[in-house]
Length: 474
Image (cartoon, rainbow, N blue to C red):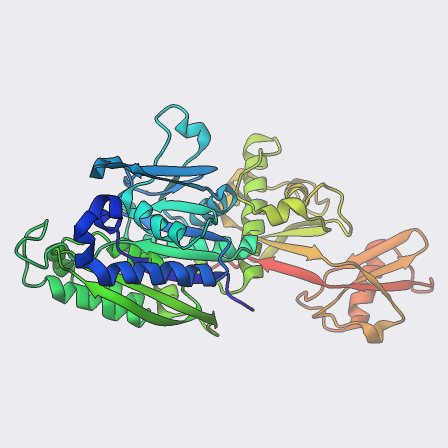
């Protein structure tokens, strides 16, 4: 399975890298300029369809991470004396929305700026943390859409890591080739004339960050001495954490293109060659995101359906009305149709299960919503679910594949296939992989009894596969 993150790296953002700002001084950062140009060429060669970039200098930086969900992104460098350095690029609003979705599912502190929320203020603009690299992308002839993110000053370093994961999840859900770029400078205290003053430990910080990035090791990065981080006066640490989150679970090879600090600030150009998926999660996923992340696209998508089923039941039980669109579901589920079963358990015991063999709604999302509510309040075997039970429920969603006619029980496997037993107008169904159902004969017998089909009646057998997504209670 190929990776959806096709390029990832970290770039510096001194405005002097733009000729209109730097003028003759640009010759003093020749290695960084060459590194930026190579970064842009490598990103272009990756085949990326969208670039997501996180900056520490957005005017919208606040207590949470921010996503610009806008159709057009633009900005200039007038604050650096170069108003003629104007840039604009199409925004990937769909990917931005799915990143928000995945961040919300992972409980990251995040907010968005949309055309609706931006209309009351001046239209949001891009800062130099994004514009500097955008200059080199456009110089390389690349005009793909962009998603602009900004760090959250009061948001944990670990949440920035999980935000990077959210970008990868969103790329998987939308099946989009995405480049992730972390914009950030390293220490600002490398020389006596540095903008933040001099620290003899500044290079120590830069060396520690570079070593962690070369190993793609978030544990080494996050455990850098907090006093050393403060001493360095950096701006790119959170961006670097997000970068490592974006490549979590990927097989990567780090390529360091350049590092220099002629003006007292550390400028690093480093990218990862993406070689595919790792067979296992890395340690950081286990420490920070646990069940928030999986390399398996189906599991990522399935968690959305489980969230949707829970949302539908809780909304209906609390209000008595079908919920509005929760906005927590990918386009994939809004555009496809399938039969679906939703089963609800209370402390391990079945509490309701209702489903449809064939699609009856306009989308899988609507099918799951309807059947979740029916399982909660309309399963004739159980009383309706009450409010006090909601916090102790777990959910399972089965999406049904097209049934196929079979000749007999020998073509069944209770772990793999569900069964449909038909006799005239009577029909009974049993899902696969159910506890206590070990043989095809047991499957058929239970399905017969559910449909009221006598043992002496002639039957037809159909089998079907399911995609099962399931929560587990502690």
